[in-house]
Image 1 (cartoon, helix red, strand yellow):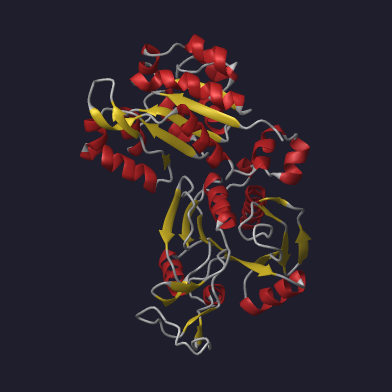
Image 2 (spheres, rainbow, N blue to C red):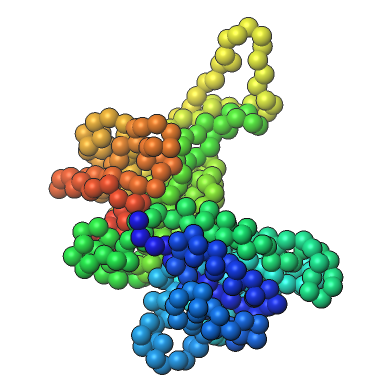
Length: 423
C-alpha cells in the first residue's frame, strides 16, 4: 500500500499552533503531510517548524516563481488524497463559501478536485454570527466536510462553541474520511505512462467541454408505510465517481441521486430524490443532455398504495398482504423520448449469466451501451456497497471486459470511452 497524502492548509488563528501536534499524529499514522500557510498563519507558527515535522517544503507564496515552476499550484491542489483546513478561520470559510481565491491557500481550495475537510476555530460570537452560519451551510451544500468545533473557554476568555477540536479527534476524522477514498486512487499517482493507459486513463485526453452529462446514482426507496420501504444495497459510489470524472473532463454534469450519504462532487449539480417516480421526473427535467448514464439501482417495484399508518401485526402470524405495482423504466423511457440523448448508457447489476442478461437488456431497452457487473456475494463483499467493480462494457459491436478496479478508475475509463465515442 502506498503512502496516503494530506494537504494541510493552516490559516491565521491562535489555534494554528495545534497544527504542529496534528502533523505529528498524522505522520505517526504513516501519512504524508504537505503544508500550506496563509500570511496570517505565519504570525502564529513558523514555516521552519512545519517543515521539520512534515519533512517537506512548506508553501505560502502564490507568486514564488521557483515554487510555481517546480510544482504548480494546480498540481499541488490535486496530488493529495484529502485537503484539510486546520484551523479554518471565519475569514477563510467566508472566502471558500464565496469562491474567492486571493492567495495560494484559497486558490488551491478552489482548484482542488479532492475531498476537503474544514476544522473551524474562532470566537464564539463569530461562530454564531449569521454570516458564518450561512457560509457553513453553503460549504456543506458544496460537499465540504465540516467538523464541528468544541465548546469551552476561548483564548479571549469567553465560553462557548468555537474551540478547535483536539488534534487526536481531528486525526481520527481524517482517518475516517480517508477510508472512503480507495487506496488505489493513491497508487494512480505513481503509475507509469503505459500502466496509466491500461488502468487509469488520463482524463486530460477525455474532452467533454461544452457537453451536458446526466448521471443517476444510488438506490431508490419505495415507501410501504411511514417507517418501512423497499430498497437495495446500492451505495451510489460508482455513479458519484462517474459524475466526478465527467466534471473533471470538462462536462456540465447533472447528478440525480437517490438516498445516499455521499458528498457532492465538485462542479456537479446535484438533485436529490427518493423514489423511482421522482427520479424519472428529475431526469426528464434535466434534459436535453448529450450523454445520459443511468447508474442508479432503481427499484423495479413499489407498494401499490402507501399505508398512512405503520402496518401492525394482527396476531395471526400471517404477513400483511403487500400488493405491488411496477415502477417506471427510466432507461427505456429515455430511449423512446423525443429528447433522447445521443449517447444513452445503462447499467445492469446481475447475479448470474451477467453478459447474456446485459446483451438482452441492450436490445430490449434500446440504449447504446450497457455496463454490466456481477453483484452477487455477501453483504460488504459484493460490488453493491463496495469500492471495487469488475464490469463488462456491452455494445452492439461486442463485449469488452475490464479487470477488477477501484470504482474511480472504472469511472475514468468509462468517461474516456464516452469522450472518444462523441468525438
